[in-house]
Amino acid sequence: MDYLEYYGLREHPFSNVVDNRFYYNSAQHSEALIKLKYAIDTKKGLAVVIGDIGTGKTTLARRLLEELDEDMYEAALLVVIHSSVSSEWLLRKLAIQLGVTDVKEDKVDLLGQIYRRLFEINDHGKTAVILIDEMQMLRSREIMEEFRGLLNMELPDGKMVNFIFIGLPGLESVLSLDEPLKQRVAVKLKLKAFSEENTRDYINHRLSVAGCSRAIFTDGAVSSLYQHSNGIPRLINTICDNALLDGYLFKAETIDESIIKAVAIDLGLNGA
Image (tube, rainbow, N blue to C red; front, side):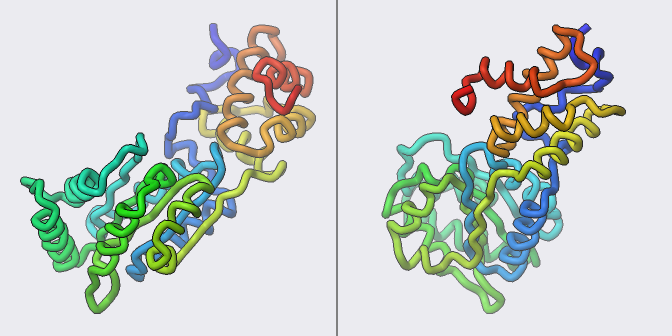
């Protein structure tokens, strides 16, 4: 037996792996999706999502991507995994994401391929969307200038390609590398940590999706959990997962404040 069987759960409710089935549509996430879709549908060109570590930026990006109908949008998500990226590499990657075949090495030829592909996408009545996660890692003025050049590609109804930049607060300084690009930001969103009420709803939502049929976390446990996590979803998941494991090991029917405090000490959170 493990804690799933002990607490009557079908699956682990607090994994930090992005799974849209567990998506929690908080008020700020709902508003963010509406604003991002507005920016895309009106072909504004550039929208930005900024948030601290663990606030759900990637989760939001995956949800947005899932909600973009393939019949209406040519959409892709690019995750930046290192900072040593050249403008040529980026353009080739963007070309591949857009569906360009036989990608050229020469930058002029490559830009021509991208333009023709974007024109083709728009000619078929679809909207081109590229989401770029961990955008703060692209600390290059040259790369920012390339994005500005791509956003100069327009049709009468708006931009030929729409970018959604997603990243940590350092993204602000990256945008400042090219002031004309920064001025092209049509929508900017900042994700914040959850309130205590959001934290409670978030926990209950994930438990429900995992098949929970009863209250497992006491009110005191939630309050303590909120204090130790500061309302950051990633930390909430980590604490809850560990708390359920400890609860199972101690054969506790519910997770109370004492278990949360013990887990917080083990994890070294908030100086506990």
